[in-house]
Amino acid sequence: MNTQQEIEQYLRDHICEEIKTSDLPNGTTSDYSSGAESVDNYVSEQLHIDIKSFHPADILANTIRTLSLDSPVFQMSEPSKPGNFRVYRLVLTGGPCGGKTTGQERLATFFENAGWKVFTVPETATVLLGGGVKFAELNDSQSFVFQKDLLSTLLRIEQVFFNQATLVKDRNVLIICDRGAMDPSAYMPAEGWNKILNELGLSQFELRENRYNQIVHMVTAADGAENYYTLANNAARSEGIKQALEQDRVTRNAWVGHPYVDIVDNSGVKKFDDKILKLISVVCDRVGLDYQDRLAKNSRKRKWLVKAFDESRFPRYEEFDVTHDYLLADKPNIQVRIRTRCQNGRSTYTITTRQFLEPAPVETRMQITEREYQRYLTMKDTSRATLHKKRRCFNFGSQYFHMDIYVNPLPPACNGSPLIILETYTIKPPGSPEPELPDFLEVEREITKDPNFSMYELSKQTQNGCGHSH
Image (cartoon, rainbow, N blue to C red; front, side):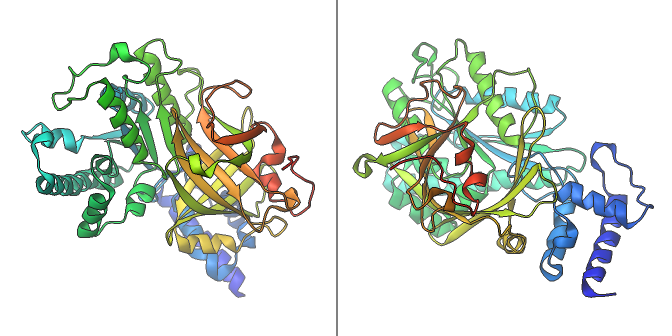
């Protein structure tokens, strides 16, 4: 028996044992007595990649691990639980009187009704300030110590819930954090924040990029729903309208750079319950939970082609070096790609599977390690080019935008022409005049429904042109 055969046999033996001792999706039985063919089919169904195409030495460990983490619907789920279930870490943040408290309770109820275990992490700042600490009375030295203790305490409290989540064996887990590790940075100068990180031995990149799966910002009622703004429901709150608007802005900016930020504003809502439904919708969309007609219309990704931008007017942004590579897949209706996202020498890695199902495609995403990324790279589809781009993440108005500036080597489909694409998630349908687009960008046209601008098409080695002019 050669090495490849030994690897395949080991995989089958290991997977059969894994199947016997694990819960299987969709009622699948654990009787795999029919032998290797059934296991091969199981592998292909779960990975969407033929195991015979794997490089034996590089892919063995990753194949076993991926199978033990099977969950084809949940985006950016942390690989921290055995079996078929996931832990999804969500930060619920926002401006004063944004609906965060009610939103947390409604969100928890919704997911519990959907069969999830839900943990709600209390807001550390409210607990500490409610104990008699008055932030306005602290001098600089006292404020620094308080913020340092706040961050340290917040991380410890969160870890209690993170640890408990990994012990839940029979269902998916949603952890709702009432604010997260980056929120304290909104209350202090950058140099003080960096000093705290250094003294605690923490990395801003890790806190912002890798700790949480999704950030949801609830916009203050002082912005667009002034009649509902009140200080009554939080004894630790002291903001007036003007202060609330500023606090909302700096809190939102604290999370610029996280790959999955959703902003729930007050536009298009006639009552507070509409805003809560928007909140539940954006979380369900990211998680991949089908809520059918139980909620308002879900948000959509919309994209625009940008001709140029005014660098001098660009707001604060975080920039990342991003690459995408498509992998060989065993079915024509499936696309698999891997991504690197790098900033200041630190990187995150993800693998995304897109299945073209009826009535709409389903895209799932999982975070992977650098080692796993390198292994997946051995399965690269050589008929497609690597896509290279600079991604800028920034806030404008009530929207969180990504702007991708494609860099050399440019996609072959562009025939050497520059390519800049702006995107955001919004409940406004394609073709509508909203959301408000940044006025420092020269936008050529909307390309949301133009397949020529999909990354899958852009990665083709053939030079068909992507239909834009500069």
